[in-house]
Length: 280
Image (cartoon, rainbow, N blue to C red; front, side, top):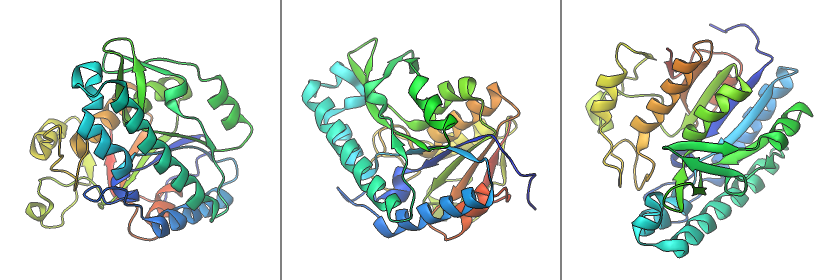
């Protein structure tokens, strides 16, 4: 069933595990990104006034060097500024490929790299001048951010996922909804996926979030909730961040959907109840 047409801002993330196979270094699913760009464009054309803040994960381009140099730990990780630089190099290569593929669908977002304007602190965003981001949204264009290595008030630098950035941005931009498109159909009750027998949890809320996140059980280095390296914690961390967004602003709707299955992302953008809903 469709929800009423929305005219506010939608936060949309294309997950790194959707855009690439994280078990293979420098993997990129170009045809998938081209298709997703077409789905986003069709949804926007069908919904005049829809505003999208687009984000994407670093995929195997960023997570391999981030894991090698322990970049999320900052100076204490031992990789120093060399590790920071190599992680950012991977982020920028993924960013360029995403931008090129989206362009084939007629979608031309404006890149706003967090590394240039975000300071991290206390496990999230501490400072972020949103003047440019707001201006891009207001003129009807799509700003595009991404998971990134950023300067931190403690330990020099760290890595922030886009879900962690969403927590900061949601309180200031007040989106109607947050959509995470990934390589699975939604949030599963157990990991590995075969243990869930293909069943997706329809709703995550305060009644089941702790149990679910314990079952997903990320290891910190190599997430059991997604294939390959995920230095930002895998699906459990993503669900926790999305829940924090809706907990702070209960009017926001969050949803985890498949981006690999054609048409699902477009349906989600048009208000269909697909995947897993995350509610306060």
